Amino acid sequence: MTQRRFPPPWSVEEQEACFVVRDYDGQALACVYFEDEPGRRSAAKLLEWDEAAEGLRLTRSRLERTESYLSASLLLTLPVDAEA
Image 1 (cartoon, rainbow, N blue to C red):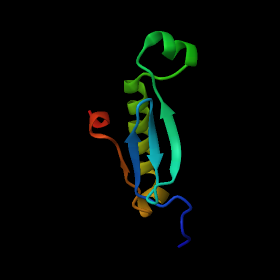
Image 2 (tube, rainbow, N blue to C red):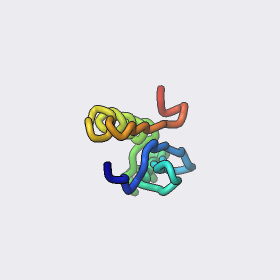
Image 3 (cartoon, rainbow, N blue to C red):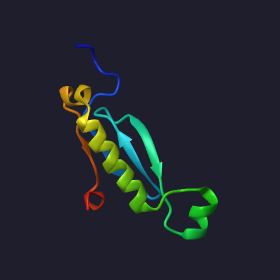
């Protein structure tokens, strides 16, 4: 089996204005930005916190259903608040 470039498990770290998806080695793979203040969110075309967290949940669900990721035992761990 070939070694993956971004080894699992992946994790999600919540920062002040975004979620950062990291691989096992801590490499940042993606950032999902959010803003809860309506005026700033609209001007920057950002997601609300709930929308960003839901997007990450859907992505995790899709990845976990993909057989190639299942065989690699991919785990995407969300922050506790994002699980609700």
